[in-house]
Amino acid sequence: MNGKFEDKVAQFAFGDLSPEEGAQFEREVQGDPDAQRALSLYKEMREGLRSLADVPEDQFSKERLRDAILKQGLKPVATQPVSNRGWFWMPVAACALGFGMMFVVNTLRRPSAGPQVVINAKDPAFNIGSQSPLKVAEVAPHEDFKFDPLTVPKPLVRDTAAEKVAARASKNPDEVDPRLSAVIPGGMDEASYDPNVGDPPAGSSQPSATVNTVAVNPVHAGTDSTSSGPIVLIDQDKDEQTGACKATEVGSSSNVLVGG
Amino acid sequence: MFSLAAKLAVTIAITGAQTCDSMQAAAVSSRERVVWNEIRPSIVTLYGNGHATGVAALIDDSGYFVAHKSSVAGVQVFGTTSTGKQLTFSIVSKDDATSLVLLKTNLWPSGSARVFRPPTLEDMEGSTLIAVLPTGPMRMAYGSKHKLGVLSASRRLVPLTEMRFEASGQPVGGALIFSDNGELIGSLNATLVVPEDANQNSVRDANQNSLNGFGGQGGFGGAQSATAGGGGSNGPGGFGGRNQQYSNSGPTGLTVAYTVSPDFVQHVLEGFLSPSHTVEFAALGVFCKDAIGGGALIQAVTPGSPAERSGLKPGDILMNINQNPIPDQVAFAKVMLQQKVGVKISLIVKRGPGQLFVDIVPAKAAD
Image 1 (tube, rainbow over the protein chains, first blue to last red):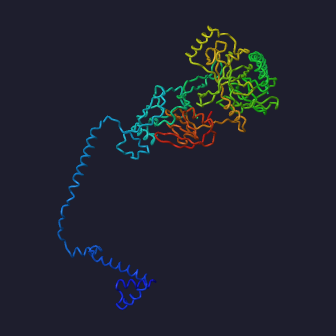
Image 2: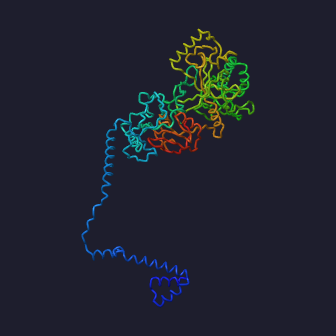
Image 3: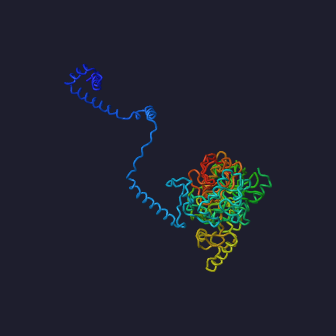
């Protein structure tokens, strides 16, 4: 069955052939099962297309819909009868309301002094953003904290206010914040600062203020630190008896200024 | 050329020095006497203002000698060999960290004596050292090479070798130190001065030792008993009246002295014998203290230094240098001792809440 014959089958199925041509074509296809199968297929298609005639005209296109509205005009909408399934939703809504009230009551009964949720915003497991209202505070990791009696221990909880001050100072190092002016670098107070041990040589620029006032996470907790070991300070003055330079030994090198 | 007055002064000084030499040499054992006789031809006694000021050791057969700077007075230095040959020296170079000075003479007969090589880095625990003074050799006990020192002027960190010796009553500063195998270890740079309270404790302990029968005279400078007194921790030794020095390993009267460590001396001698005859130590131009939580806290920055040009500021914390963690300022100085002038290094610097990555080229440390 070639294409031309298939076109003729379609024309016959849809009634496009004349009665004489139709009778002749019907005789031709009687001995051809493929042609009969195609003919029956086209006839089913024709019946299906004929059923489309039941579809309202206004569903075919916007123009037809508009024409139908203009033709029919605005008619009052018929009131729909009330569904008799409303009785099913009422107990469901009541249950939902009951659960909701129980949740609210339990929330209000929770003690306010109980444990708080502490979230580290830098923890990738908590992808809630830095603006989350659940963030109470950022707590430094509890690594080994070495207490040095010569130094002032820093608080473990990060002081966000001081951090902002330090950040502002780091942006503009020439601007001295009055809250930092009394701080000796290294966290020492002025009383423990020994100028004889730590004076840098003349000509070196001295720090007027420092940004190192924020408690930061310790990188090395002092386990491998050598600052606790003794160190020998060699003076330029000579010992009158030995003729060699005077040397004194200090127990800890943490407060000793070293150049490099 | 010597003037007549200079020759006369040197002759008088040589006579006096040789007298003291024989007296001093009697204070060493037979083993040390052998070593002294081996190294003596390579040592020149220096003179200034009519008296002996120190000694110099041959480090290159072309006539280069090294001496402590306290042994050198003026631009031109006079000296004499063990055979009485008179030499004149010129100052070529110096290093403030070790206080060593490089001298050069054109009158040195090549091949006439052994040349001192830079010291080896072997641990000399328990060995004996020989301090050579203008008056001759003196016996010392090796203590430790694991001490660290800071020079007050430059704040430079220097590894030290600790020694102990019996107080001799004569100036020992600037003496050249040799090991018992004849290597040049360094020069006697400093002696330990202990605070008054510790000094009193030292005297009290000495008196207690005397009551217990350990207060005998002699010991360290003598013959066999000196070994126990010098190197041991509880051997007999002299309480020589020099209670301004102290000992932490034996009876009082032992003076604790320091020279720079052998590897440091090795670096200095190699610099002296380089074509430029200069000693270079790399430096950034910062002065640091220990930072809380780790790192070296920059206290000051030298104007015009590589650190200032790279933007480092007081308050910055050095955390890492060339992949070496910096737990404190001592570690920072140790790492800097390994760096070379002109070779770029990478720093990780903590500034406020952030970190900086800085590449910097060290310059030569100022003396």
